[in-house]
Image (cartoon, rainbow, N blue to C red; front, side, top):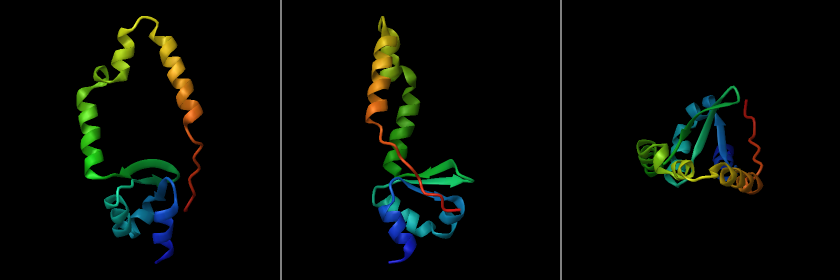
Length: 105
């Protein structure tokens, strides 16, 4: 196994530079086929993501449904929804892990 293969199988989340993705596209595709996503950066800024086709289809369905179809639309219809939105934001902040991504420049 190459060093690149080890990196792509261990790192969470899988974040690589555009140059690295270009030279190791086949390995990136294998990772995506295995059900993981690969985040691609350019100069440290996220510019793209390789995701499974099923994930893309789900994203497209969510976009087509629009904001009103999700929790955001439900919140807008509730009186005092700002209080609930603040509570949800707090839960997300507490549960969200702090993630660091390696810099491969």
